[in-house]
Length: 90
Image (cartoon, rainbow, N blue to C red; front, side, top):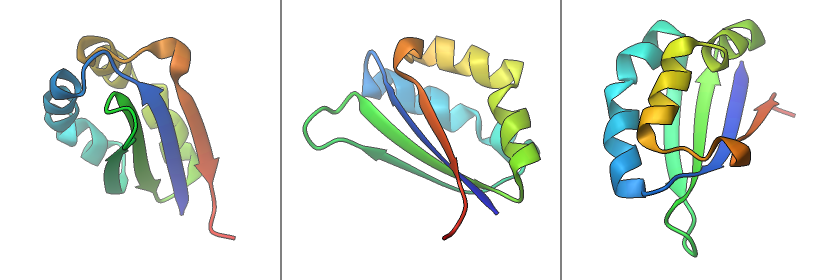
């Protein structure tokens, strides 16, 4: 299992969230088996997303996909702030 922790800023959370939700089919097709969205208590536009994948290859393919990049652009993600951490259970 590979867990991806993604941190990024968005221009406006209320605009970002509906776009994120429309990408459920993309996430499912990419092998996301669990997802969770968090946001900072101090900055509502600082978003933390957790995605669980069966393996690293599925995670790499998802984060390299054109659909994800297009959705992030449409949702107002500040690409300069994206941090992706791929993790394993320790």
